Image (cartoon, helix red, strand yellow):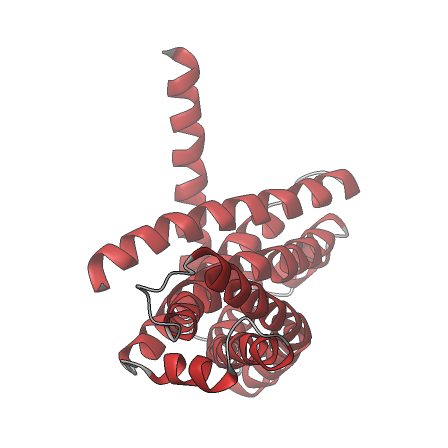
Length: 253
């Protein structure tokens, strides 16, 4: 029982420190002009730089989903347009929000944790504190706001490229005709699913940025601890995203 108690106590400490850090981070910015400039920089660094990997992965995943669905539900009792319908549902409901954010947790989360961790071990954060700057608010809040604001764009790109990847597979192969696939995409379409996916992705974006910021900001030691914090941020973000995905699905769907 003792190891379990120590484990729970350790994570309660982490949770308390996380809440206190977020309380400092969400203070009113001291200079709004500087804050908005930093938000734009973070949108470019965390969001726009992620567009390429989102497009690439989404297109190939959409193609693979189309092929897998067409091969595994081949039956005269199932309409062929079901391939397009199921591809659309999988991409819109889960891949473009949950799975994409799990992928971005590795790219964006590790980037934030390593950046803040390096600033901590090189005493740049301490220098900001000495100058009277709220370092948590100055460094963390623009990252959270920038990525949360831009992640809906990544979701839309992912949806479009995923369905386009499936369409290209239907165009260049004979597993399903493009017209049938297109009909399946349009069949029983609900715009509510787009809003649902965007809402989930924005929550996951907050989890990624805040968790990575916590581990990076609280690094103690040297370069080895920076790498460890980066790994912890990816693992922690992934676990929290999966748990939040279950909770949000139960509440909204």
